[in-house]
Length: 195
Image (cartoon, rainbow, N blue to C red; front, side, top):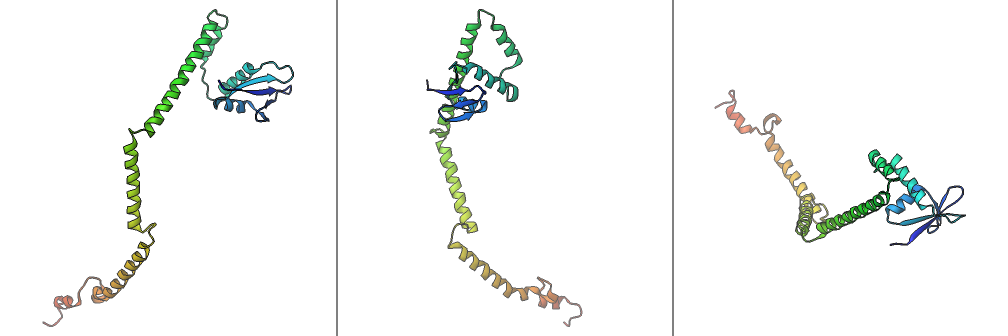
């Protein structure tokens, strides 16, 4: 069990974290508890243990303003057990139930981390990595991205293609500037042209 973190409660109802040397709110205490810290709230003057009342305040605030965990029916059942001889048994049952739930959650977290980093998925991770590297190489060679020598070569190819198309343009223009019409063939087809 980890060391308890002592929180002092002053007469003005302010809470002071002795470890962090700063004033804290109920939300700060809830964050500490969620992170796994064990807290102990003491009255500054009398030294009285106020931990239970502060924890109940945190739960009440969370139930009222946050996402509630305790349904109305469950709260009624708990209230019914307060005057019952079964009260102690209910407390033990709830503690054991929550402890078992937390152990299952931890076990599931460990299993998921093993599944994601273990050898069962390692081939798929390696395959995905190899595919990404191949895609990056293909992109580099196709678009010239990240490959310095290929950029001038690509520019040179584009320039030579431009020069070639400008040389071929007059021949392809044909009669009347119409593309793809050959002037000699037009003469053969013209009815007014001499035979």
